[in-house]
Length: 183
Ligand code: 5GP
Ligand code: MG
Ligand code: MG
Image 1 (cartoon, helix red, strand yellow):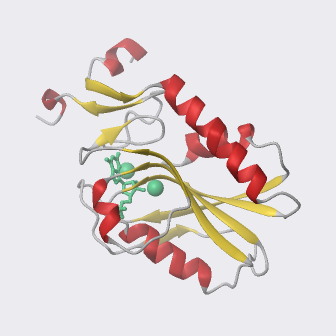
Image 2 (tube, helix red, strand yellow):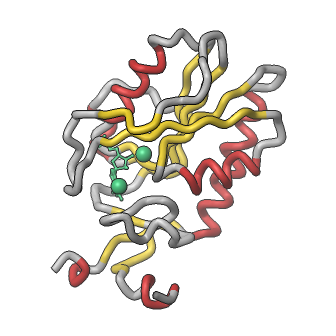
Image 3 (cartoon, helix red, strand yellow):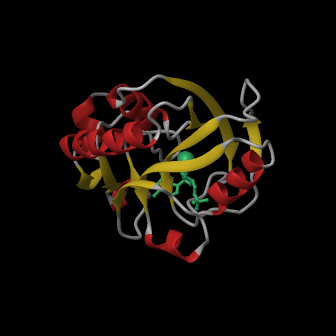
């Protein structure tokens, strides 16, 4: 499948490649300033956060360690179930570490609040969150996301790590799917 065919499945582009790069550079500057002189561990949440992790970490001018977790919350649908399962845990202990969770998108916030409670119980020195995208629903739950790329409308989006049935993760931008894709 060619890139043009993939893009043909989209209704519209919501956040362009340039906008993502620009915003991640801003966040990276903020993060570098906030964590200066500290030992920072980035925890990427697979698989959606792969692109954010790759680009955000490369924009950071400080030393970081990286680790990954894989959790499942959605099953095959497009709504969060609230039931979270660890598919892959961190490789190392995080007690006493400054941990920044790197997420693709916060929708209901259920996955994130579960994840934060889980990580907090491992006693990190600090625990914060950076997410590329945030939907309006997220405002209803009490999760404090310190670094947010973009607030977007209540729509199902794909691209830049985000999938629909495991596809579209490789699009370099974020967009919404055309209705014909669902049929
Ligand atoms: P939450 O628990 O906050 O509702 O959802 C968390 C996870 O659901 C995200 O990490 C992401 O994997 C998935 N998700 C939420 N909204 C969207 C969306 O608009 N598009 C895609 N592709 N995945 C989403
Ligand atoms: Mg995610
Ligand atoms: Mg998904």
